[in-house]
Amino acid sequence: RDVERSRGLGDVYKRQTGYIMKRILVVDDQKNVRISLSIGLGREGYLVDVASNAKGALLKLKESHYDYVLADVKMPDINGFILANIIKELYPNIQIILMSAYDFSDYESKYKKYHANYDGIQYWPWNYGY
Image 1 (tube, rainbow, N blue to C red):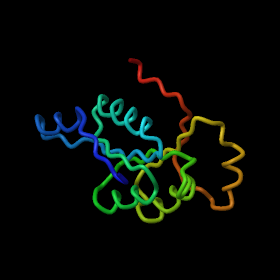
Image 2 (cartoon, helix red, strand yellow):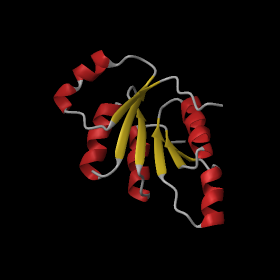
Image 3 (cartoon, rainbow, N blue to C red):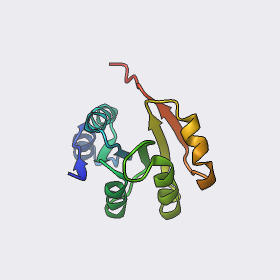
């Protein structure tokens, strides 16, 4: 499946309180990463959608509003740097955080020519404190 939907605690909270939660789109080609982030961020009260690639992410962005996009740097179709540029051009108010399990400074310098437009970098592993 190109696009998946995670229903976490954020959905329950929204129904019970009427409060609109921050929405996050997680983009990663590895299913275990999508699941883990969806569960962790859902427990923190975010509404989380996931996409397995850049194409799926762009489709989700057309369908819904997101406050944040967490995107893997290394993906098979379009890498995170290029995806960040596309998203920022179409949706300049979305905060984009690129993520990687590797030191991607060499990879990042390779894509400097694209003037990657992202708001932060997060390296794996993350610790949710659980």
